[in-house]
Length: 406
Image (tube, rainbow, N blue to C red; front, side):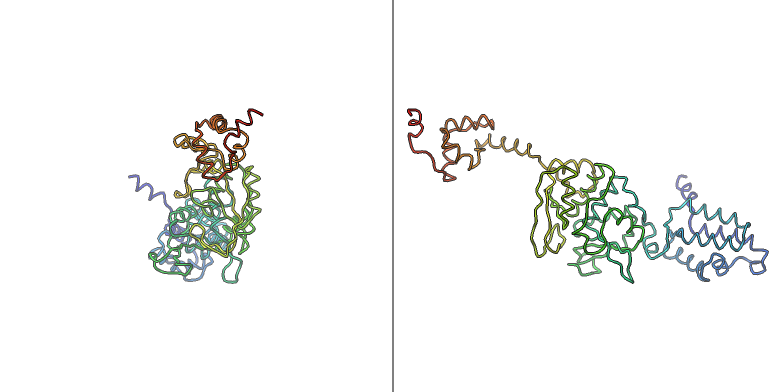
């Protein structure tokens, strides 16, 4: 019973076309041309389309795209032509069109993108008001690009990544409504038809609105993108955390909090916003693979730190699973090191510290100082072992006895 109710609630394109035809048939019946059933050809002309429009539309819905929907710009043409032809008698036809719009999620424009990706969320990035949107924006800052305009391809958006992360691509295209049929398979950047041979997956589509929304949030058009991106303006810390996690899942090193980018200012802005003390490094390279993706040239690198990284994981839980590795903070690492040192009676002083201490106090006092600072009890023998291991010059025999006398 529930299933039949759902089917009744769906207003398909075919049902819409037939209802609109029947309504126009009534008001057009006074014209000799439309005395009989309104033909596909005449119906197409009334809607302001070519003579084959309705015939092609019905064929498409029957054989190739049963869920095909008509874009809003095309429906506006329908309205204008019906109103122009039938004036005040067109009220019912306009209501039928409005009903179709209300009961279906329609794209704004007709075009190739709509043809191949009828469910594409053109306005998905219009406003970054959820963690999910912020996460995918950050991911696109790392993995995505917008090609410079060309006569044959304008507003082209692309994303590519290693095949091992295909689940990530699947989640993204499902989120934005991209048709998975058009995922491209590549082997070392060369297109291949065989999925099994591919080691790299890529998608691409043209959409003006989608591109403009990404550009508004700072995704740069053309090859200069990687060296010039900046931190976008978002409305909350939670959104920034999700954005940064998305970027890490694209250009971060697994098992660490390290991110890579060609833009130094991007890392500086992250440092400033999150008040980080970590240094920005520079990796000189003629080109190589980072996370399975070939990156040309050198990159800037910076650690985010365990505390911030763990906060990112806690803030958004739907990130790339293989990179969700919780990290130990500095305090936790010290605590763990002390625990291990206690078990092994390990010296916690560095070589430099021991070199200085060995001439300031006896080994007995060094051992006591070690216990006071680290809570780890060691003996003279342990200290002596490290003195020999590090080849540290130590005071001669009887040195401290002479000190006491003097």
